Length: 87
Image (cartoon, rainbow, N blue to C red; front, side):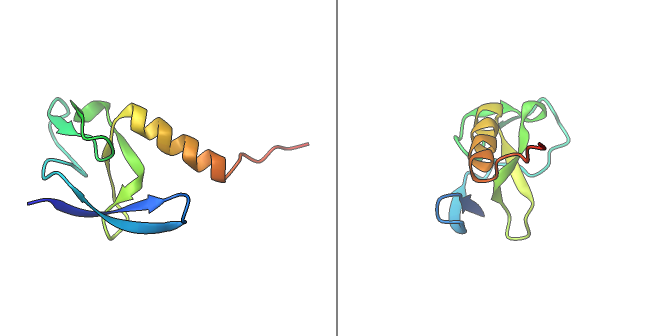
């Protein structure tokens, strides 16, 4: 059985329903446990992962994603919301 989640589509500016593997985590006590990234599915140590900006539960809690996928999420966010520059 898969986990139902929501992924924010930065181009359409809305959430889409997706299915994640059962092993994807919101929280894990064992930081050495290998869990799949909610974006790419590759296994990583939970302690080396980040909270997703795009893949959430229906209540807004982010799933764990690897550093590469988190960087991609951040790049997409900054493309839509450029940092404020003081003059």
